[in-house]
Length: 533
Image (cartoon, rainbow, N blue to C red; front, side, top):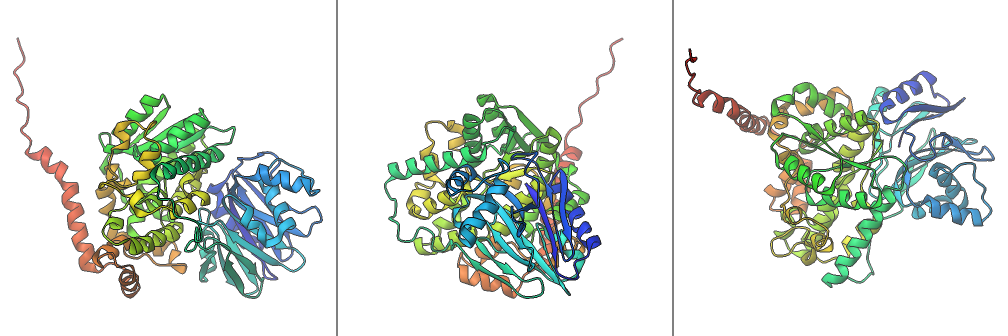
């Protein structure tokens, strides 16, 4: 929805602040600021809810607080009713105003009432203290850095690297206060490791299927409650297909978008499903040779990612959101998070239930810097707001209460999800096995050709001020026999790939990319017939 930028403190520089906002320009349509001595606040706003009146930064009626807010709180209607009953009056229909009113009414406890995907800052003007908060899963980003006499806060790392100072991140599910010339004190308000504790395990398949269906349908319904056309990133896999099915039911004005090689599995399955549903379908057809070093560099610039595999997926993802922007679509759904919640990875079957739960929780907690970061940057980098219905906190809590045996059964991943929607899912989708995005699009090996350049490109943008590029954790985990503790230790001991590993990877990718040329060279040429006279 927005790109946030703040500079707070006696040394806040308007020129530096303007550069920060300029870097975030792609995240919105209009620039809105409030500037005073020692307090520079602004957003680059994507107009989605109450488009004309939800102007930011939003100031409280008494002028004491200023809010800069990114994302959307989907239960803002319900919160508005509660606040109205307590005497609160509103100037707009926006969730932005509701967020600040909730903070004024309930203080820091307000974060427990916000259902959505968001990051926010509230500045107390008299003191310059800044309240920072981020949604439980970290769907929306928030970073900070400090220079002498000034605290800087922004939605993306690229807006902060110009300060040439270390960059810090507000972790998912954390909130707290930062002083303009003092420490940043953050603490968790939700702990994913204990989410669902004390609640009974749901081991009855029929009950579990019903609950999963209700929770996911409700999550999607809330995320398509808009008068805008809704896009769906459609790979033709289980998760994105469910997102399209439910979105079409709740909001018929929707369009599906797919990227891939013309005859790739993703394009083939997606074309069939969109045609069966009668949903408009945009296919971004790419040939492997269309992916060049410039595209990889741009994907790294936009995404700021820190694992090789995520960067490859970003290379594939960016063209989708570029096309959505061309279509004028501002809101889109993705299927991210389902694999982590419902057992979409073979490793869960290869270890016992307790180890599987630890792996499950580790992946969920790290989504903020992997898939969710990729989706946020690739979408907002093109002025599109991506929403992730599988990661609604209520659905995450439900997934934590399901035993592994309902997630993986009879050799099938995400078994309970397939059961929950068995009556509406086409059989060819329900039975389609999982395949990672970049592979099933047919573009993975072309992007992999450029892997040796990833770390250098990442550093060239200054992103190492937060974190350097490191080996793919899944690769490390596999080599450690899915032992999480060993994998974490190994990842810390040796972050990057060795020269030899890069060389092997390059040889493998080069062979794959050379194969089509070799086939064309050795293929028998058609015999040219003499012209008939």
